[in-house]
Image (cartoon, rainbow, N blue to C red):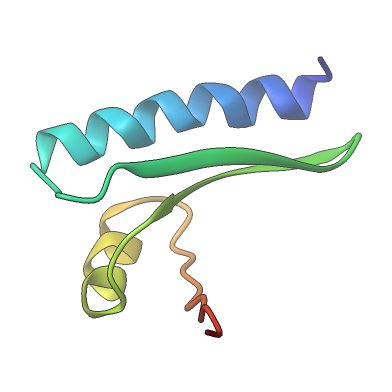
Length: 69
C-alpha cells in the first residue's frame, strides 16, 4: 500500500474514534485512494451537522453529497 493510502487509512481510525466520542448515530467512514499520491479519509454525517463536524476536524473541509433517488 502506498504512503498516502496508509495515511488515509490511519486517519479513518481517528474519525471512527471521534464519532464514538461524540456519540454520533451514523458510523459511516472510509478511505479512498484517488491516485498514488492522493488518498482521503472521510466520514458521513447528516447535512444539518456538517458545519459543526467540519469546523471540529482538520482540515476544515466539508462537502454536501446528494443521493439521487
